[in-house]
Image (cartoon, rainbow, N blue to C red; front, side, top):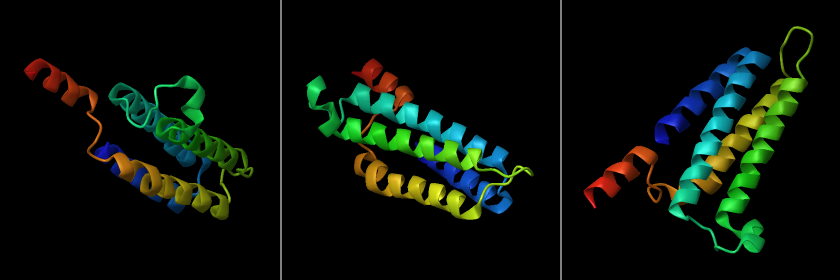
Length: 128
């Protein structure tokens, strides 16, 4: 996960430097893939889940997943706002990047080290 966060930072820097919609698309795709993996890790680890489906909106997983979806939707809007030269507005792109950083700070930092990634989980299960 930490390596993916570093990759996301690099993609944000590239997109902010170029303002190209195609670079924002790459960032969005990487974020969506990263988000899916995070959500799967949280599910497998039963992290922050009450176990009651009707209470999911109040769970850490539910709010985390909703924030991921909001960021992907925001990225789609930034890409859609590109001009005829394929450049996105700087203000909207910076807002997207700020949301990604805020997400990492507000959400991801809360479970750092508490989830067992797929490869590590297999090793732990095999050893146990």
